[in-house]
Image 1: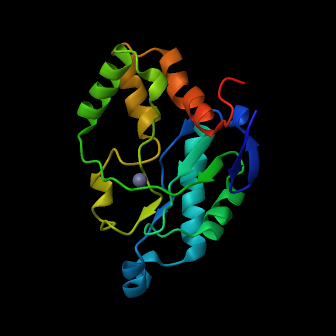
Image 2: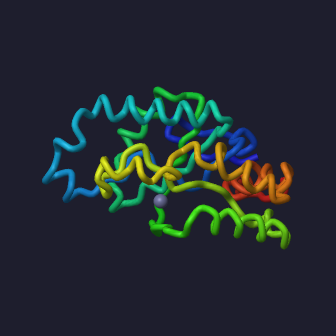
Length: 190
Ligand SMILES: [Zn+2]
């Protein structure tokens, strides 16, 4: 079994468990941070806030997240490590990647998921919600109106919705556990 590097050290791919493959902890823009540092405020408070949100996610049963904290999105691994120390029950894998802003409405995305499962593609899909604990791209006053853009969205809303439309628990386990493990496993099938 392969090991994958998390910010708290290597973890066996067999132990990743239910995994969201694309969630952000902090999404920051250098220009915004330099010009409006008061908006970020206290480093300690932001880290504690993130830890609280991630604890709630772990309590929902998610064991691992992948944060594509790419250069250009405020990549700061020591800060992620400070968060991770406060949430030892959650594996955090940091990766680089491309950000695509997804503005497709919830029902359309969830119905696509249902249809893709119906056509037999559960083995090729992973789930995540592209949420952030903190994002400086959006006015904090507006964020509450993006009611489905948070860490608990899949567990609280998407999974009940797709289960009610025929997606099976086996398919959900495939997408949340087996596909991420296979992605990080450098010897598939062993
Ligand atoms: Zn993203």
